[in-house]
Image (cartoon, rainbow, N blue to C red; front, side):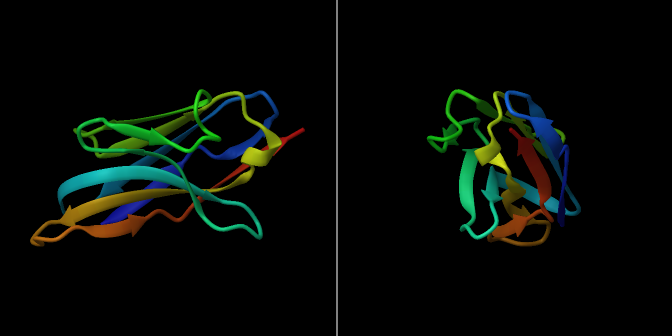
Length: 120
């Protein structure tokens, strides 16, 4: 089972980026999906999460600017980021709590990370 992110890059302050993450492999069920970020010298932090039923949760820094969404038929999760600020610069990681095929318990999975750089 793998998570593969795409969509990072360099953008000017005030701009927008959309991150996408796709889960692949033998998957029985995906529970919560989320985006985390980690800036140099800082701890990894939650940006936004979404349950299988569509319930969302955002970090205060993301509220009003970022939107998380998912497509349960495609096993994908997206993060639309608007009004980007230099302090949003970080490596963004996709996370999913998934039950692989043949398993009964869920396991945490992480993507490889995608860099987002916001210039001032």
